[in-house]
Image (cartoon, rainbow, N blue to C red):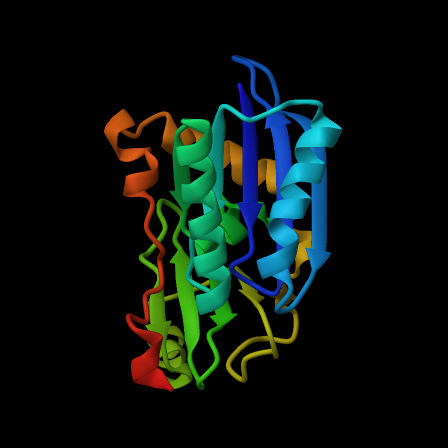
Length: 223
C-alpha cells in the first residue's frame, strides 16, 4: 500500500510518500520538508506532485494528514487539499491530531516510557497543549500560560520531556526542545497513524468524515 502524508498546519510543509507492506518497515519513496510561512497555499499541491513523481506512482492508496490544532489557514489548506484528493482519487483519508503527531515524531523521544508536555504557540497569548502520560495522550487544549503553569506546580502534569514551538514558555526549563520541521521523524508519525487507521471503521475514513481540528472554534471570535 502506498501512503501519502502531508502537513501544513504549522509554518512548514511536510510531504511524505511511503510504501507499507505487512510485517516490514515503511519504505520511504520520497520526503520533502521546508519551512514556508504563508506559502503553503500555492506550494502544497506542487510538492505533492513532485513527491509522487519521485516515488514513481500515479496516486496513493491512502492519504494521512495532520488536521490541527495550529494555524487556521494552514489547517484549512491541509484538510481541503486532502478532501479534494481523496474524492478525486476515490481513496480513504485519515487524520491525526497535530500535537499527537509531533509528540510521536520528535526525534529521540521515548514516547512509550516517559511523560511529555507539548505547548504549541497558538498566538493571542495562549498555547495549544497536549500532555502524554505513561499510558495515554490527553485531549488537546487551548490554554493560557497561567493555567498550564498551575497544572505543573500542583503536579497534575509531571513531564520528563518538554517540547514547544515559537518562543520558550516562561514556565519551561531551559533544556526544553523546540519542535521544528527538521527535527520531526515522519516515519514515526506514519507508523503511529497507521495503527490508529487500521482500528478505524471504513465508513469513517472517507473524505466526508475528514474535519479540521481548530479547537478554538471560530477564529473570528478571537480577532
